[in-house]
Length: 265
Length: 219
Image 1: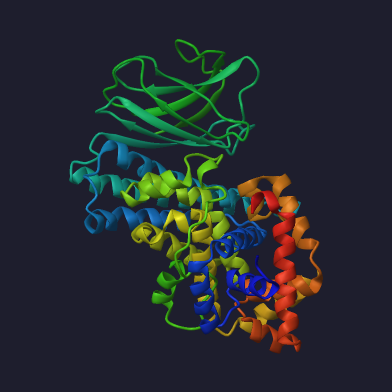
Image 2 (image 1 turned 30 degrees about the vertical axis):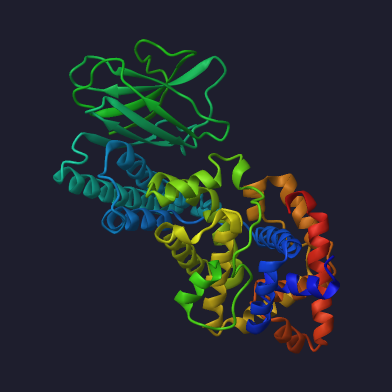
């Protein structure tokens, strides 16, 4: 049975409100009393929920990028990780690209307050987006280049696919294609789900073929987000560009090009 | 144990928040996380150097950590630094986490809160923070913005948590927030509010037990 005084100490303990000596004495009791440990565990969970009542904030893309770049460079030597392989590098390369895109969305999400300023603001915004995108892509290229020099990612191609439809301007995707393994991953964001009876289909443009090569369907959730591992229907020699089109349910043998949703190189 | 690691970096002051020793308790959410792999699996893979697992941890909890740190610091940029510190610590010192000591999220939140409090104590912002806590305690219902809980637990659950906090008396909420978000000890709270120490202790106890009772399923 836990008395009120102990409950007071436990409550203050989980809030960090005990003085040092009080905390030490309380910890000694904790080690010996299972019932008290249970109470503290429950109160800790309460404090966590209370902390979570704070207004939600989304970390900036820059933070994620800093962490990725930081860990990407430091970790192997410090923790003796296995040599980078396609399966380990690909998600990080993808994440770095996606982080840049999140930054892009941050700029895009700033609404324009006054109608008279719309055009000028839009120009500024697009300039920032372009600068950001260029910077991010430059960083990605720099990263890929350095990895290529060490023969780690020589066959990986990363492409940013931008929106092609005015009705869906925020849609964006990143495609990472591994030519050696003839497989890739595409991550899409803010792409409205296709109309009933339609599907999105991914295509790879390889100059070796007269028409784009089918890379399968691209599914997105209700929020417009999706991630698909894909393979090409035909051997790819050089994945120059990627595109996403709206096709009939189940996909088409070749793109109808009636609705080019995303494209990029 | 978790706080010891944090204190090693920030230097000795009054210790922050509990969890300094070893005791077993079960994780409330870690093994049933609806958003993907269990926390236990994530931390196991982080320990093996799996960066994808770390990224999964980051995606799951970075918003919560940032929200808590920003609440304490009142500065988003500095809060992001705290989140970066926490993530770096979790990546490089994940061996410091013991699943028997609590959930991964609780550990991470504790690290974030402690690092943020350390920064507050090292700065001159405490006065501003105390004033904000006092104002917030008097206006508990003015929080229309989505909370970090909403992202983690869904709107309905977040509303339940918010309602439970709003149901506390202003006095109870004030002492709890002064302790948790401003890093004051019971004695310091008593001096600040010009109340007997026993009154402060009783308010903290009643408030926390009431929250535990109202948030029963999640506790």
